[in-house]
Image 1: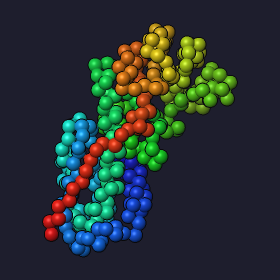
Image 2: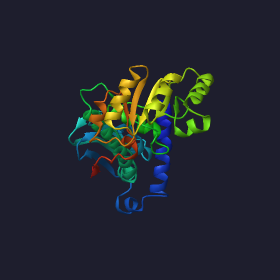
Image 3: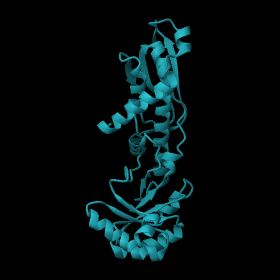
Image 4: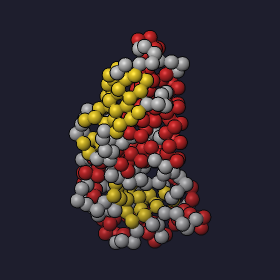
Length: 280
């Protein structure tokens, strides 16, 4: 993780532990003798891609900085099930941080797994699967990293690193040509992408000099027509309502990119568990 992602993780863990632990884990404090040392094992219980071991370690180690870790799984690799992480430390601290660690690890692994499913569905094609900005607030960098671990690629990180001229921008700016011209005048170094919904908009965006066209909610047949119409003059990205059942047909249309918001906004958490054995 880079520094910005680690800071995002640190902030997330602080908030999560504050809301879950409050002023203390009453159950653990009442039932577990102070100073007990335990060995905790995180286990993957369904097929998928693990990502977020570092995040789980950070969560488990927040309440006991002396905890020792042993990673047991390779991240970014499809696996059926099995042990993921072993941690040895204060029993009360491990149990207090258990839910925060599992929530983050299960969610990030779910995002990585969703990304991997889409990548596997278009295997053999040259298309690149992209995520979108439909991320959990406060977790964007972590979720974007999980997408990469699953084998997909990132679209924009935020509004600041590329132009994506969409319907509302076009309406306010006075058309595609005007919007593209204004963006080019402001900063020529950024990738410039224009959302298009029909052949006329495709023609105008290409003529205006867009680098990439976002072909929104088009059928595979319409996408293939757009590929022929553009004829290599701009990159093409399909988006909107694409599922695991339809993504292969979309890839076959000849577009270079397919963006899927569901990779982040609808990813199911990977099923994980944590079990503890008291050592002393």
